[in-house]
Length: 318
Image 1: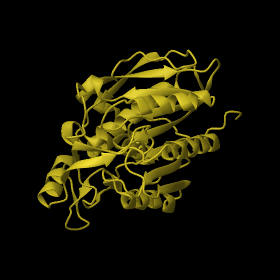
Image 2 (image 1 turned 90 degrees about the horizontal axis):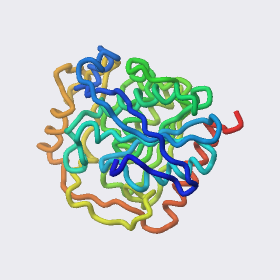
Image 3 (image 1 turned 180 degrees about the vertical axis):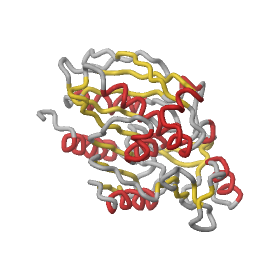
């Protein structure tokens, strides 16, 4: 986070917490070693918890490639004002990472999903969280992380608790489990069809696979909306963004191995970095992408969708 301390307009001060997490090199490492990853490549992440006056359901907000931004704190504040305990996770500070906008390979997407499971496990035990009731909301790279954390096989390997809901906001869905069963976790995704960072089609495909696996899944594609359309900032070009939204989807087996791009044979030697390099060499990558909102209507649309989802899956009077 830019600064760890933060206070909402209501006067509620964020309570710092520390998440013991790790830097697993792959999905295979998580599914093979589980919590053993904490011994192999430990990292301590920081976050802020904003409690209610009494125990309440909690929503954890997970940022994307720019790290914790004003918009993430604003969404946590909106949800807090609606009656939820909220928390914001900083996945960067403990890794000495400033941004992954120009380089997503500074740590793995598997590690991002592992972070979500470890943070959720810690927060579920907090007395401020009513009966361990919680959900996770991730944006961009954080959206990818919360979707993978929803997959039962991965979540259980990473020691994550049951999640009432997962809200994936313009998520990158370039890595997809072939069998993405999510159990009782409700999942929703939202993305704009003008997103230049992440593919709306990939998100639809992954969420539909979760639905076909028995999940309570829904999604919304917002016409004309760009990446980060939930921000109170006009659309602008981020010239350093390294993006490849049209790159082929990389599928994962139950054991976390990627399938070879040439077919359905798993290749345990394939790494996330290998796939990134292959996508760039094939011409899918480019520099520069837009983000922001076209008008005040888009952030308002987002807030309404966000609140409707959480009110449905995490009822405050339950």
